[in-house]
Structure formats: structure tokens, C-alpha cells
Image 1 (spheres, rainbow over the protein chains, first blue to last red):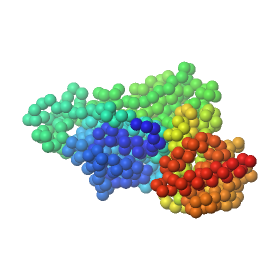
Image 2 (image 1 turned 180 degrees about the vertical axis):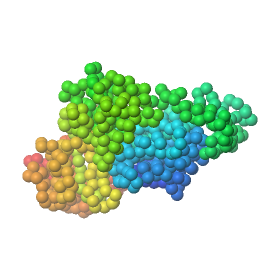
Image 3 (image 1 turned 30 degrees about the vertical axis):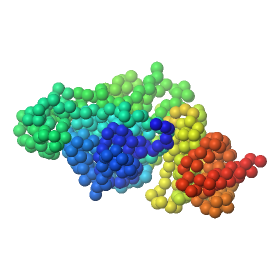
Length: 371
Length: 183
């Protein structure tokens, strides 16, 4: 591969191809449309299917069905479409069907401002669908990482049988950076292995790691799929003795693998009392501020989160314990700051927020550091 | 504050939607990255409409890591419309470079370099649409932010088939105009 100047959204498309995604269903929406454009062009070349659906509800349903049919699948959208997908994201979460949902965040609420960036869907990614459920959300900070985290999103969705949200933003989605993509043939994604014969197969049984293997339809392994609470074969149940162990397994399965799921970067400096915490495009503003502050002789730490959900409690707690002040910078009115405050306590947290379609600037973060 | 981070050049190309300023930014970014081996971040913003409205493309060039992906205070502004000039001329460093289309931007700061970019495009190629390529010639000719060869290659690689020669001439016209200013 050679160096190419590539948009974040294009890198997501290539990441999906590299990860073995062979089914895309979606409805175009700014600022995510380039993901669909590239997959409409490239998926047929590798034997994949691209379908433009009538809306985002159907898109989400289609990728769930496609994965049950055996193809790794993805959709991409932005705020308004992400809202429409929520019911079926819950379905994928409790029916434990791997899939990847790309949300290129734009300014909301509602139609908001289609071409303006935002990080306003952080809480929606966690709690947008009703009921308690597991979810993973990953946020890239660069074009290259948009590729890498798309691959990781597919791997995690398979490994843990869960929808994974690639929670990116208009800045990362539309910016161009030079990238050299890796050799796709070297990329390996987790594959489910089933050892029991079809007559003993239970798609929703408990296993030591909490994730029973999934066999696609059409191979003789019979199970039922429903959004109703279900037993180990997938049939609806109202029995508490069946519901309780199922609830316990589904809602703790990610905890069992939390160290593998948690992706972040810490840049520590001896003697620092102040730390920056950020993610997505805003982490780039924070890193700029960090370099300026250090050049001025200040001691500052930084924690960049790539895994947003499950929230990296352990690492954020340790970060809070050794620092006096944590500056949380984000393009919303303090959504991830709620989580940081929950873990480190409100008194230590200073919020740097902006939700008007303009990026948080390094100056805003420097002001908070010096204030 | 952008210059507190060493080795960071911030360029803003602005005009009306349809003048090709976003493509000009992409070509400049390719010249600096693919054809010069530097690090770049290119971004753009535009209104929802396809024509008219203010449109801007930003290119940040560095030999090192680029963190904040947007212009903080431009080193160079190229403005092809009065509105674009009005909107962005205050966000240029005191010692920065302002290049404006002499016919389209009537009301500009004294330090602005005035070149009839769109007129030159029409005169050279018979098509105003090559103004963005002329602008790239002017920009690189005046600043040397990338080698001439790099921008030539980048323009040729992006020119639609059959327009390579036209774009080469447009770029050349930009370089000639820059050379005349420098004298």
C-alpha cells in the first residue's frame, strides 16, 4: 500500500472491508454519507452486498438479519438516524447479534446543523435504547485510527456478541490525513467456534466467558431469535429462574473482558497536578493545549479515551486519585463529564464544553488549566 | 498560540461555494503529503447549498505531529470573494500573508497582495473554473510552502481527464503572477 490522502469516513469504509464486512444497509445522511458511498462502490468487488434502505429503522433491522445469515454487517448514520436505530440496537444487544453501527456525530438535537460537528450522542450511544443492556462505543482521534477502530469494532462485536458503536464525529469523518493502510490479508477477526453437535446447541447458554458461540442460520443449528426475554434456546420466557441468570450473564459479559475492551492512551508527566481528559476530535485540541502548556513549563497529564463505553472506570479513577484537577473537554454540554464526576468526584472536575458547532479550541483548554 | 507549537503552517483558502476552494485545499494537501512526505490535515466547511455561500478549506502542514486539526490563526489566507475576505481576514497572524482576487475583493487591508486570479484564469484557459488552480500557483509561487514539482504533480493527478494541459497552464499563470509580484 502507498500513502494516500484519505477522509476519516473513507478509512471507516476500508476498515469495514478489511475486517471482512460483507453487508452494508443504510440510509444516507450528512456527515456520514461517504461511508456509504465507498461501500456501495467497494463491497460488490469483494462479493459483498450494499443495500440502500427506506430508512434507518430498516437499515438496522437489515444488518441484524444479515449477520444471522452469516455475513459481518455494518450501517452508518448521524444523530437523527442514530435515534431511529435505537430500538433495533436494543434488539441486537439482547439477541446478542454482532454488528457495527457508525455514528458520525453532527450538531443536534433533532435535525440540528447537518454539516457541523458535535459529540452530543455520547449518552445516546450508552442509553439510547430502553432497558439495561451491554454496549461498546469506540471513538477515533485520527483518520488512521478510524480505520483501526473499525477493525477493532468488528472484532469486539464478534468476540462479545454485541453491537459496537463507532462513535466518531464530523471533524474526524471529513478531515483528510495521509495514511498508509496495512495489508488487509494480515488482519484477523475473531471467529466463532462451536464444538457441540447441532442437537445440543444452545445459542444463549452460559459459558465461562459469558459469550456463547453464534452459528449462522442455515447450518442445522436451531435456535429462536426474539426481542422478548428468552431462555437458552431463545424462546420467550417469563420464568424468573430463567430470566435472572440470563440478565446476569448478558449484563456482566463485558465486565469479564473489560481489560481487553478498554482502549486509551495516557501521557503522564512527573509532578503533574492537573490532567486533561478527552476523546474524539476534541482530544486533538486537548493534545495541542498540552504541548503548549508543557512548552510554557506547566506540568500536565493527559488521558485520551478510545473506548467510551463501557466507561474506563478503573483508569479514570486512578487518574483522579493522583491529580487535583481534571479538565474534561468535549463538544457537548458535559455528557462524559458526568461519568468522570461519578468516578473521581465533582469537586475535581472542570468542564470545557462547546455545543454550537465549533470545535473546542486549545485556548479554551489552556484557560481552564490556568484558571 | 499556533506558533507556540513548532513547525506548523496554517493555510486557509476561502471563496464562494463552486469556486473550487475545497478541491484546491485537497490538491495542496496532496502536494505536501503524497509528493513531499510532510504531515498534513485538510478540512473544510461549507453551507448546505452546492453553489454560493461561503466555503473554506483549511490545510495544516508540518514535519511533525499535527494535533488541533483546524486553523487557529492563519499564516496564509487566500480569499476569492469579498465575503470570504470579510469573514476570515481578522484570523490571520500579524506577519501572515493575505492573497486576494483583485477584482472580487475590492475592500482589503493594505498588506493584502492583490492578483486578478479569476481574470487570469479566464485569460489563460478561457474558463473561470480554473481560478482555483491559478490560486495554487500564486500561493506556492509566493511562499514556496511546497516544491513547484510537488504542486505540479498534485494538480496533474487531480485534473479530470482531458483538462491536464489546461490546468498546467492555469498553474503556470499563477506562478508567473507570483513572480511579477516578487520583482
